[in-house]
Image (cartoon, rainbow over all chains, first blue to last red):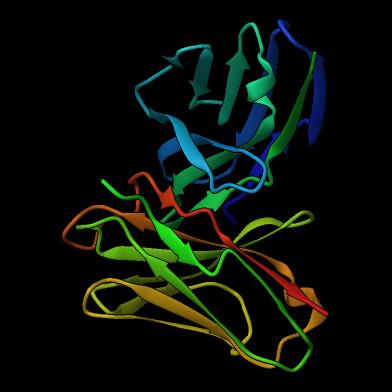
Length: 112
Length: 117
């Protein structure tokens, strides 16, 4: 069964600190992995996409990593800002399904 | 380029009623998918349409239905509403002119927040 597990479920950090969110998946065969950011009351927006051959990809202060062997991905946020407060959703495509598999998300709160 | 537009943004219904939600995809996008989002379950796939045909369906009861029009706009309907149907309903569109493996980026609307009393 295709599954995506995210940890932690929620995270509170102080502004300016770094943090790392985790995503483990069982989707096979693997096609790609995306991280989405969802602000409260808004729709999710794609941050990065990772394909099988990519290990690291950055988008500003967001850096995603992928280990296709262990089926793990992480999203590292550097020098957090209040605007980073949001839910971060890991989405994995593949597994013989047209529809991607969604994680339940990590809720990040950044305090001043 | 206009994004995905969902209407209405908020609505309140009572048990037993029905509701219709609308989604206008990004111009040129022919694939539209619908999702239910609740705090406990995250995003749950409802169904996906491509060129007016339902290509995929999630594990939801028959009270949930949808359709897509020739201009790619889509509607979803929930009949005989239950308290558990209270959720944020998200619509997403994808580019591409032919059915693909679904590896493309999903462009989401702001959602329709449904409250069932």
